[in-house]
Length: 636
Image (cartoon, rainbow, N blue to C red; front, side, top):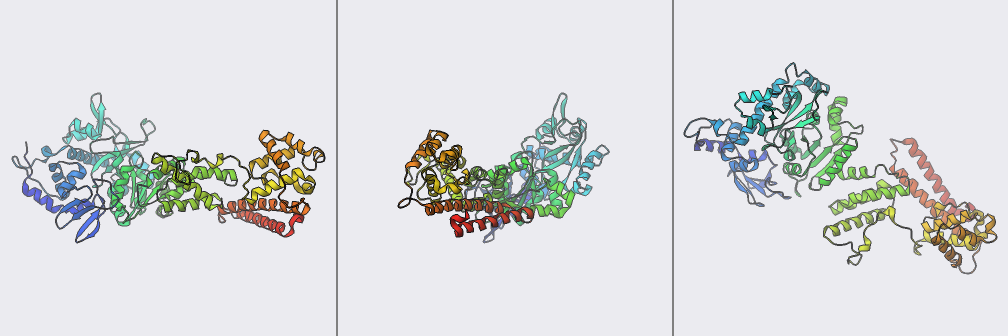
């Protein structure tokens, strides 16, 4: 058996592999002064860079987790290799021929498992790439051409074709000296009745590389209708392929990501190709799994995502419901970044590959540049579908969106989006919306600490758990609220002195009484025949009580019928007119607020006619309100 690698060859590898270059393949390094570099440690999760590299000394050390060593120790730890595997890998990268003690040059026998599996994938990638030119692969070449990719594009990304037979790759690997167990362990073959058989058959194949450029797996796309397998078939979990830690295209994108501080996350292999060919060379994609915590750690190191250095992560999703769900999942993970995160969604639902084919490279670049903050996208997605033209719809939308805003950890950012939510919903009541979001945020913090919602004095108050605004019950009049008090006063006048308000009262709709119990009393009056009906002259109050919907409304009718009117002496037509004008003015204010809310949500460029009509409606309401104020009861 071959012996160990000669010491002088190990020294040559250590000198050739500059530590700043090797470490720089895995994380972004910035100047730390004194000739040293620093970045986010790849061996533990941290927010501020404590991983230091000294090029002059050829050493690294993390002051957070205390890991340290030379370039060989770094590769051994980050890629989980043995010492011999590390030296052989770096020797291959730097074209250094190794010699072994007690038997001379015999690298095959000395190689460990990872090196053998990586080598098997390298051989398989070359095999698939060669097969793309075969007659059988015409369907694969057509697939690429239909999506705007040339032969040169396929070569750049290493795209290949897996023949439709059962053992084409297995026989090829066997001829290269790979054992059946190595084929199965690598995921290139699966167990058949008579031994290993090809895992990928009759499919277009993309090589999936790790951050250093080694092929560690494949993604294969179905091409024929008689293929009963999944649309995309990926390499299974293996000793070298962990899908939660792999990002397709990262080997090509890492330098651009580190240089520009921007990563673009797309959904598929062809989307990565389209982006790179369009000039968006920071594009990457997950491989058969959702974008998760391990992927975030990889990007954070490349972006130097900490309180000191900030970058951008831009997600592109399809415009359909599935794409929106993917964006909301990303929102849940988003706050692991300090980096600013955005979403780009093509309005017509096209992905980057379709968009490039339909409109060219510039359209892809424009799509990425037209990004919107992920928080904004998540909130707007949640309020879609609600009728914001009605008060009920706006309240329901607030109930749906407020928890998302409350989940924003950054307090200043949370307040900013609460204010923007008020604008998007058209409440025109910033304090109400901000207060609602703040209440939910406090409740979430208290529950996270295992406590109960608290009152203003800070003591636990189990009765103050937030209730959705749409479920809050009606309330009695607040004497501090002039809008509520004028409604109460008009109802008292209508019950006790119907002749003073009979001329116009029946034209006042139930919707002008915004307190639910008062609206119920108004409905009872309508059911009793109104102030101009026969009951208004004799037995008016009993008739209203009998028409009440339930005992609670009946009790309120009695209360209003005996409560004194809030004016010195007996009420007269002047006082009644003032109350009626105030109630109608408040109603006009409410309608004006609704129209302003609707106007705020309209785009004057996209819907000019609707915008103009709504603006005219606002002008008419403003004019009517002024006439009430100037003309008093005569304007009713």
